[in-house]
Structures are given as structure tokens and as C-alpha cells.
Image (cartoon, rainbow, N blue to C red; front, side, top):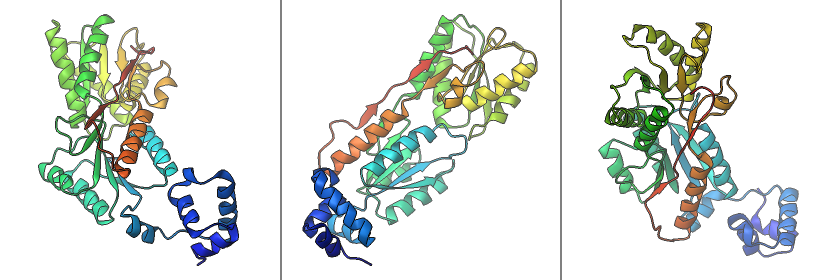
Length: 327
């Protein structure tokens, strides 16, 4: 394997300058960087990341843990986050945790064994033992897509209860009176559904009917959920779906049955996936700024790498209700 000293000699710079090029490329003059890049191409040099990690106590490995990636509402956020982390010189390990604490714990142990610089979690970890383990790990831990009352380390997300409350107000203001909730079996979706029902009842409405589905959400659940509406004693005028995938399936099934959306039945989703704006009718949905989450994650990691103390432990990125044709 070619050595760093060979690259330095060919580029007519010191070995320290080549090291700076790899570790902090922004501080190397453009002309110098071009010579180093040419020397790297000519020699086929690859840096010894293991040696660099030992010298700097940083592995530049980031573990990103998500429940699933098939039809996932987290995909856009993960893509933006991985792109940004890569630009900063990090390598991202993407691991799937499913919905069980055992699988999550195994992936966390694997990440810690590889001496990652940070673990990025999707959602709030409920298991007390796992939370305690992460608190003592001395690794940056970032919980995303939620704002726990007491973060493990740093939380970057939004309030699911605030979303449920805002959706109830939004739909009441639009004149709907008989909501039906389709709730994925996850703590996040349950918080939104509970807050929706509390606000709806507090404003004088009857308790919403509801139907639960398994996670992860998928198109077929929406189709089955629509068929289940026939069993309700009172037919809803709006269905609040726990994901855009469920909303899409429900709208398609309603159209097959000759039911006009939203004239006869309104539908809302969650996640504001790309297809929500491509459907006909387009789907009213809750938008979470995945790019903002990715930006904040990278800001936190940069500050931690510089040894800067963070002023806040919870960063609320907020949300928006995107009103479209379906409701």
C-alpha cells in the first residue's frame, strides 16, 4: 500500500498538510488541495482510518438506527442526514431495529463495540435498561422524531401530542364532525391519537372511533381499513390515518367503491411523503422537516467534536399541516 509520505512528496507538501487535508479539508488552500488530490489519484493512496481513530480518539463512525426502511416515513430524513454526515467526513452505519427492545439492544451493543462517535435513534427509547446503558456509554446519543421529557443525551424532534391536538383543531375548523382514527401500534402514533381524542372531546365532540394496525405501515392496511368502515354504527366524515401509506390505500379503495374523496369522505395522512403530493386527490398530511433534523444532528456533532457544551438538550423542529385536496 502506498504511504502518506509518498503522497506528500509527490504533492510537494509536508505529511502534516496531507493529514490536515483528510481531517480538516476546509483549512487547506485550494491550490494545495488540488495537488494533494492529484497525488492521491496517482498513487492510489487510502488513509489508515484505524490509525487515525486511535490517534484522535474519534472513529468517525456514526450509527443510525431506524425501525425499518420499507415504505418508511423516516427515509427522507435519513437520506438527508447521511448525505450531510458524509460531507463532514463521517461514515454512517445504518441498522434496522424492528419494533422489539431486544433487537434494538443488540444493535446498540454492536454500535458501541465498534466505538462509534455517536448513535442516532429514531424515536424515543422506552426501555429503562437501554436508556441507562446509553447514558453511561460516554457516546453522543441523539433521539430524533420525538421530544422525551428527559432525553438520554440530546433530542431533536417534535411533539406528537402537539400534532394530534393541532389536527383535531384543523379538522373541526374545516367543518368535520365524525372523525375515525387509524392508529399504527407504536408509541408515537398512540400519542398523536390520544391527543387528538382529548382535544376533540374537550371541544364538544363525541369520542372518535378508531382502528389499530400493525407497524410498519403499508398500502394494504389502508385498503383493509376502508372496508372496516362498513362495520361502524356511525359512518365517519373524515378518516385520520397514521401514515401517508395508509391514507393512500384508503383513498384508492374508496375510489374503487365509488366514494368521492373528499366530497363523501375526507382523509388525512402523516409524514408528507413525496407521493402525498402526487396522488389524485392530493393527500392532506403533516409535514416534518427532515432536512432540519439532519441539519441539527450535524450541528450537534460538530459542537461535540469541538468540545463545545450544548446550551439545550431538546431541539424542537416543529411541524406543519399541509392542506391538500383530500381534506
